[in-house]
Amino acid sequence: MENDELIPLSYISQYHYCKRRAGLLMLEQQWGESTDTVKGTAEHQHVHTTDVNVRGDVIVLTDMCVISKEMQLFGRCDVVEARKERQGMCFPFLPEGRYVLYPVEYKHGKLRIEREYELQLCAQAMCLEEMYGCSIPKAALFFISSHRRKEILLDDTRRDEVRQTAGSLAQMLADQKVPRPVASARCIRCSLKEICQPDVPESAESYLKRLETGWGSDDV
View 1 (tube, rainbow, N blue to C red):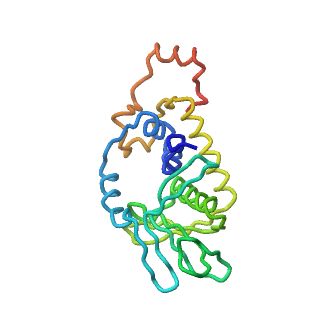
View 2: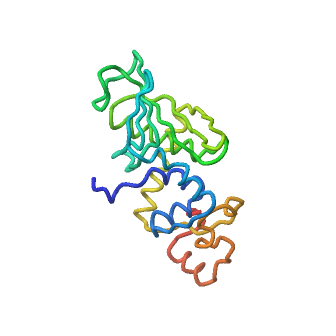
View 3: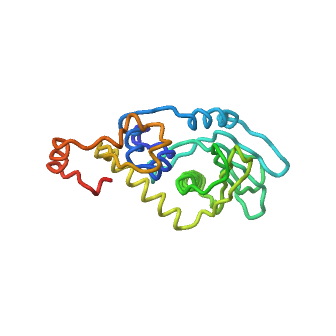
């Protein structure tokens, strides 16, 4: 599989935030900055350098590359903690011993519940499982402003949703169609609002063209 057939796993989160946003990023390489994106980038800097640190029985790996050929995803984990445990596995990139991997995804802001973040984290774990034949039952989101972790159970429901989303992204990439805009409360803070223009009414011409091509409400 060539690299250009792979999709950044961060689009799992983008797709659940807004399908059109994911399409603009993936198909048109659009990008816009906002206060949130600038703060998030700045706060992520210390985990965006590949490094290995030992903290007792825990080895902390930062900016670790991951890939899933099955789901056509690739990306990087902010942090993967390798915890020494008797029921763990041996890994080629770790010292002698048995370890359980525990991904940690850093997020800007205070502790909160965001389904899209949980699915992005689950996708990272699933990539690691495919790469190394291991089992990762849990992972965590770390919210930088509040300096708190939220542990996430990587259950079957989340895993199924990740697979379905990866399939939807792959189909969007194959179709080369950006979903049409749907205005919502999330548009207010979206960095792509000016590019997307969700409040601009659809013209009669574009509406008829959409009907002719069969691109209807199912694409929303």
